[in-house]
Image (cartoon, rainbow, N blue to C red):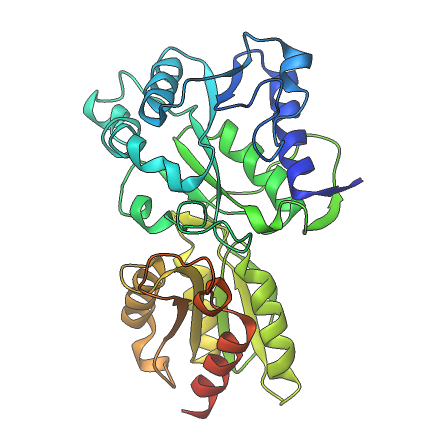
Length: 325
């Protein structure tokens, strides 16, 4: 075990995958000698050469189109989109090509070895073009997997699982945790299961659900709630698509209440999908309406970033309102 921050864990995962399989390639804007804008790919080009870790032009649609072609021919591409906000020029390639490649060919061809990494979310004063959380756009697309880690241990284990998974996977990395989240990480190759949520804390009064950087927010909110005698069950969803309906439903069967939080705006956010599904599954067990604590329905602001983000106080108030309903 080695103490790492999230950036180091991601770099370690890429190094592990590239060392084990010469077909693993890493590319994107400035990922070479520069090591990426956040340094997630530091030293990979020096170690594996320009044929396996290299810079691309500033054209996201081209990056993913190129990655699709590589994956279709048996390579294992790990493509970096420099910020998740920049992924939209590549939207067509991802949702119409990557996601549907296997289906439209009747399994004659696939791009299952494709992984797309992207720093995402707010908390770094990045303004409207460097702070968005676009996971819900892709959760609407059958054929993809969408993953968000919360700490270094998850970052390495889930990224290695994504690289080895036989489905194209988007790996969104909460950038405000890159250097802030530090923990013990195994040195060897290990993989955490995709599609399985993790119950971090068991409780009886209310289920509190989130992913990525919001898990730290939830932790602080739950500490406040438990000082008032509210027993919270905390779940990290980890994988947005496919998401672990059974784990969440079983928790709500027990607690009768659910609070979901994410940074993305309320309207069309993935919390709405969760709320609809759990309402269908657990309707007769619900003691209060399912609550969503999210970003606001506005472009992501710079000066008012703290007001925009769903912080621990907003989550705490939602927990209290749910229990006191």
